[in-house]
Image (cartoon, rainbow, N blue to C red; front, side):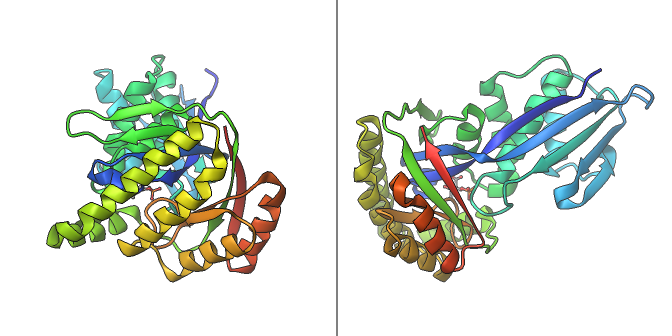
Amino acid sequence: MPAMTATAPGKVILFGEHAVVYGRPAIAAPVNQVQARAVIQAEPRAVAGSVHVQAPDIHLDVMLADLPGDHPISLTVRSVLVEYGLTRSPACTIRVTSTIPIASGLGSGAAVAVALLRAFSAFLGQPLPNERISALAFEVEKIHHGTPSGIDNTVITYAMPVYFVHGPARNTIELISVSVPITLVIGDTGVPSPTAQAVGDLRHAWQSDPKRYEPLFDRMGWITQMARQAIVDGRPELLGDLMNQNQDILSQVGVSSPELDRLVSAARAGGASGAKLSGGGKGGNMIALALPAVATQVARALKEAGAVRTIITTIK
Ligand code: PMV
């Protein structure tokens, strides 16, 4: 049997991170320059049910049965078996690799889950539809995020820019068609920052003073709606100022950091028309809006200000 392979991209949040956890809209887009990959190889000579897991990026080389039940890879594989009413898997080796930096706001956890759900369900002969892939990846996201909004699994599953609202009963998901391409420069602070921590800290602050945080979440929601309109109307030049406003509020709610602030300032000084953190914050990555002609210059400015790596990507 040939090996079954699936990939999933990284992602950035353009607008509305954190506020999205509280029911306000957010916009996210895939980043195809980095990706997670899952390869499933049948092992016809091994006994049924024996699943060998290799994830060299996290130094994992074990049998599935020896992984804790709440390990993301274990949870992902088992969720597919449960989906199809299977009690054990055909013998196989699962190899998971990723070029998406871990705990840095680029969606590595969701991308690994999506790639593995796709590859493993296809290996079983029944590829899952996107809706189920996204729903199962959301369950895995709870390990990484605590109380995720669902935006990461959604944008990574559909691999298209999305306008997303997390609702109490159901989410609103609008796939956005981008009429004028948007060039972004992504800068990595190199400071790992688990999303669950940033989300949890903000939740505590909000619980103790909702009157202070609710209007700030509202403002982020309005900024996101204006950004959606600008993207749909093909007016990316309006996005820079909106990004700066969004960053200002993210700082006020306490999820920026000195390293992020330094990269944001450097990007603006280097020619970007706007810049903000992206994702959970307190470290991880930031994004800058740049005309294609100045993107390399902005990337250079970010490197000089301490970015451990930069990616130039086009949202379309
Ligand atoms: O840090 P990331 O890329 O996983 O993004 C988290 C986005 C948040 O809005 C902070 C949390 C969420 O679940 O939406």
